Image (cartoon, rainbow, N blue to C red):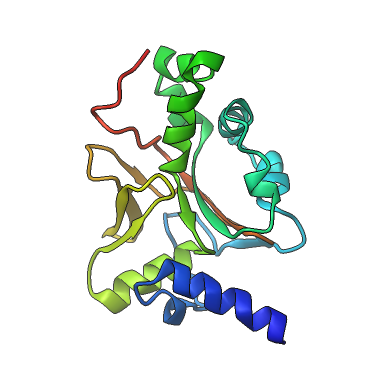
Length: 193
């Protein structure tokens, strides 16, 4: 019990903003057709991400950025995971990010999609309800992202001109959560190749 309680308390402390009491077994849907977070409790984020549909582009980006070991390690992270159609909309700029000389830009972009702690869409939805409005957190890249409701859907925006909608089913792993997004959140001032 002691080992089980500490990670939950630590994740709540890291996440802050009343998200610990937001834990709920109710299945707030993040999008029409979506279900409660699926539990891959015996697999890491890296292993789970590799098996998810529509995540090949993100897997390639994580590999090109050499960040795979982060998602296979003991830390707890929430990955706001742009799906393949989201990467496709980047066009040639997205393909250019995968080139070796663009690795620093790619690493920076990916860090803006990672939050500390284990947060499910249900947790975020509950926090939105508890707060009575938007909830803001800081990514590992240092950018504040704001979660909001758009009807029943949950959206996230980076304050730099980019926003995304939760889509599909989130996946909980041993060391975090993968929340699929319909858009790559790229700041408007980010130079493109």
